[in-house]
Image 1 (cartoon, rainbow, N blue to C red):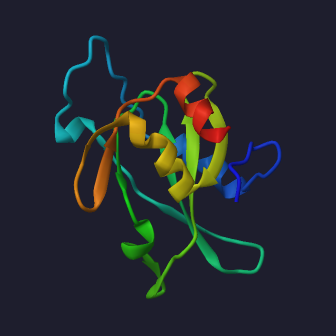
Image 2: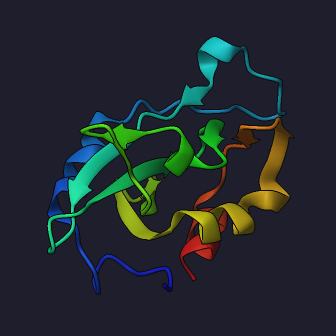
Amino acid sequence: MQCTNPSHHIFEPIEALAESLKVIAVSLPYRPLEDSERRFVTPKFYAKPDGSPFGAIALTEGTETILPKMPQNEYAVDGKRVPDWKMVLVSTTKDSIIGDCDYQKALKKLEKHTLDSNENTILIKGLSLDELEAIVE
């Protein structure tokens, strides 16, 4: 599955996700953030056309974010694991969702932006608009 631009593939419920995100600006020069200043993701769940669920996790421009490496092993809907995951890329500059893509493919592209990681999570630095757009390409 390729990353998609929202003009080609829109999940309407995800649009509401952008409105509920807490955005934390990281000022320059960089300083390490306290855990309370980092964004721990809260996945949202939606139904595909066939009714099966998929999970969506947002990555917001300029926000250090702690992402699960394998969300399919951590979250369930109605007691069943959710195998399909998308990463939704949100721009504060454009005040919109700039795209979504397969979660694992996005994580691979984000490796170069890793500040820290452990067995289950990865800490991603706050990305610029250009860096976010490169994830969608």
